[in-house]
Image (tube, rainbow, N blue to C red; front, side):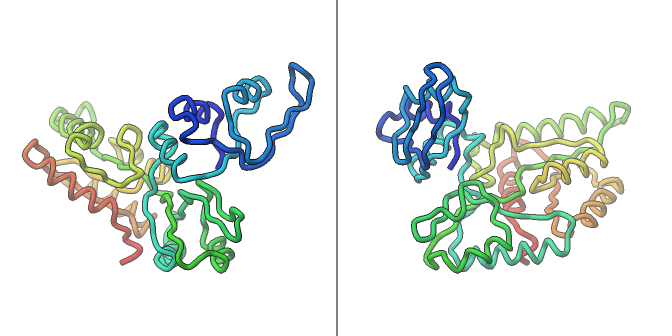
Length: 286
């Protein structure tokens, strides 16, 4: 897997030799200062001296040997960059899942895919790298060489919540809408942590909650950000919202849409559980 040298440095600063960062392949270059050839061999452990040499020569990323231990520490240190897998499936279940995504892509303008949250090996060689896309075509090319007992950890190309409240400052009920929308944002960014609800292992509330206040903005963000779930936040589901729903379903027949029509401290936990269920649902499997 490829990581930044700043990240490698942070790992060895924090964990020392208990979490080795090992070069996956040789690095060879002429040092800009000494004019001598520098070579860090495959299997060598990255250390503090290496960082300084790499940095002054403009090498900011290195390929390192993937391990579950190293990955776990990267997740802990850099949660926005390295996330826990969205899901882990057996070989057979993953094969079915990839096939279902391919079928769905034929019927929708949204093209779903998955990315590896691990390294997949065959005969001692990496055939799928960390965070590499696993398309239907690629999976079918390589699956014959993968151990049938393997489990595949992956990320979905869809991630995040889109909270939608149609409102304008000139609306007579603008303040009511604004406060309800703000409470919903607070619920999914901050309060969700206190309640201990995890929408999915790879969901990061500080960055994965988006908002929209118009049909155009909501549709644009759904398409361009690839959010996983659209949540309408309003006490009154008007024709304008219904028009948005039609537009979204025309674009993506498998779109996930939920609604919050009432929000108070008394029902926050119930709302979080309901949204989690919707978030994890794959309509294309039904």
